[in-house]
Amino acid sequence: MPSSNPSITLYRLQACPFCERVVRTLDDLGLDYRSRFVEPMHSDRNVVKRLTGKRTVPAIVDENTGVTMSESAAIVEYIQSTYGDGAQAGGDD
Image (cartoon, rainbow, N blue to C red; front, side):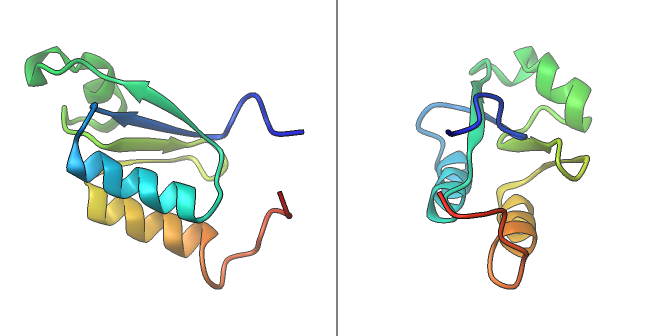
């Protein structure tokens, strides 16, 4: 049974190419995650600012590891190194 409360939360914008890069990586690795769509206006993204200190998306919070980060290239690298090739698999889905 899939988890109803994934440990990874992705803060993103609709149709954001940087956000989609992270989504593609999460999907390619078969990871469960929760999407939180944020305010389109940069100045209104207070929830992201509270988490990461910045108002930029994408941003992720990984409750498994305690990692909170932004910037798509860094997030993709983190996801791949933590959950991708060479990482311990959490099981088969």
